[in-house]
Image (cartoon, rainbow, N blue to C red; front, side, top):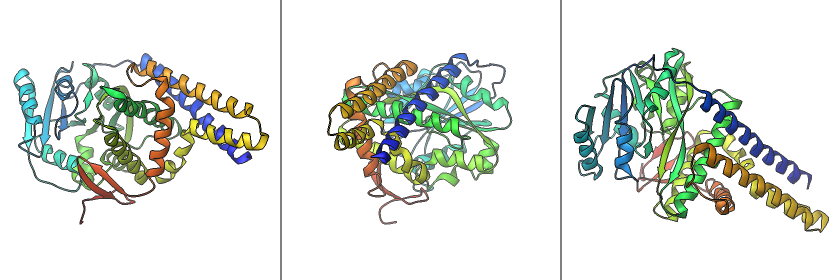
Length: 381
């Protein structure tokens, strides 16, 4: 009984601490000032594979930056990829923009996205290199916000958090809630407690000479968590990783429930391999589920329903308030509703359990195995 009570208190403490970290980040974002004094030329890498939700609008948002000089490189493996027609339309719509399309089917490792980056690297013109996934959307001041920290020569890389913006259906909303209400707060907590040593695929900007120092994109070619490894290698070489105050918008459109489960299971197993100890203790983030166990224990101990009802009701109220505050802070009005909060939390709990049952993941309609070092292997390798 006492152990369950202690775990419940720790879990509730996590929720309160997460709320405080979100508030701190929100204040910093409101008070931050982006100086246009430092604007070195930038090359943006956009690895693309297939059609994503609202891809045309996502890609266009990178073409209208309030920034003096930047290059965009789109990279694909397959010359028959349906995304190529959209990219060519964008290139025609912005003839004055420095845009290049690279279609190259060479593979340099198990990670197809990184192979794409390796193929694009030879076309990059500038000293600041920025990688952003094709399902991300940004505003016109994005480049200024991301690049300005490089005015400090101790900064080796800049990365961004992202918030989920669902498109259609409960399934997409549930996935967006996972991004906004579990992933983002957990990163902010980590950022408060220790020095940041990793990057996120939403945005990874790095100085060219530092990327070459760590072995280039080739050094990441067999890792599942290429964003994590990029940050780790840069930090291991003595450079700082800066978490930008800019939050990128992640457009989410899950076709069905199975797709969402496989997506989140891949993410969970990725984190489990790169941060095994920290991931094991993420059960403390399941505050609502832990409150149910605590309520059951209280009933067994007291034989009264009052304490279980009070415990679960209090935690559920705290969790709903956290959900509502995050929607306001992230301006994500469509990212779920209070009625989905229990569903989302129970889903996260069972996905977390499932992540310990195997090492297989599905990625871009292919099955891979991931080992304890974070390396991925195709079937038969």
